[in-house]
Image 1: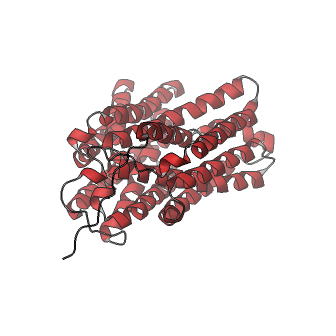
Image 2: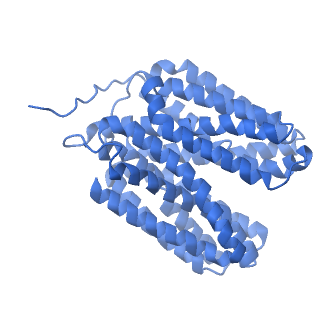
Image 3: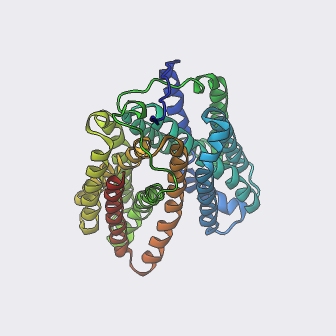
Length: 396
């Protein structure tokens, strides 16, 4: 008589310290995000480059991140999480140091290769490890750490600019911080070989037999499409909300900046708060409730006119979006068979990168005709996302 796959014996080799290392890893993943937009106004005139080159650089890096994410399941099967993290963060630090030394467009594209490949592998590897070995609250806090890094990077970069070290000093600082993370990951490689204790709500404690769905199932590919839709909504809102407010609605730039900051603050604060209730409420309920709240928030933004209603709508949207990415990521071991988990998570990370590259560009085409149409485009994609999430829940 066949039996369900055996569950790994939990071991508790300093799981708390390892978790702190993982959190730092996701802060380091977020650090470079957002800095290119801060650096570019100073970079392109010094390097004598066209201002539009920024778009192709970002697209190249995003596509390489997607490639790395899609390949992460294959890489993890051969390298395991710890060594892959060391290699990936080393790639990221090398890309940042290349930017610090850049002398022209060729340097930028050379830097995009290690930056993109490193970011995709770190994202998929750490998400997969936490999904398999830690409770849902830690997945939410992991992604809150990304928000801390994404907020800190531009601040550190701004300090470098105002202190006279320029954009090169900013990238040098970030590259050295990433090198410090390489040293930390190297010194803690032994912790990765010991499986942390399976916490309540994690993959090892669910009731009933293991799921049997494979990575090649319809649900396996649908999950990747869902991540493309989610990141498309999050990124497009953050990228175009300011322009909609300033150009289309007549807001002052500083008022629009506060609104966009409140949106990202809602996402980060929401993930911290959701972490305290995720294990009790469950990923699926939180994701569905979050999607509904995001629909209400982005619908309110599409209709809003004044500052108060606009900022309130964006905060609600940010809070609603907060549990979707980490909740869906953490649910993978409960949807798919154990051998498929790493592949599905890698595909989800790759799909997220493709969504980040696609919809903002489509929204740009809409913006060229009417900026007022952009919020409605995002709302339509969010409605499709909600429908796909409900379908995935029924399939798995």
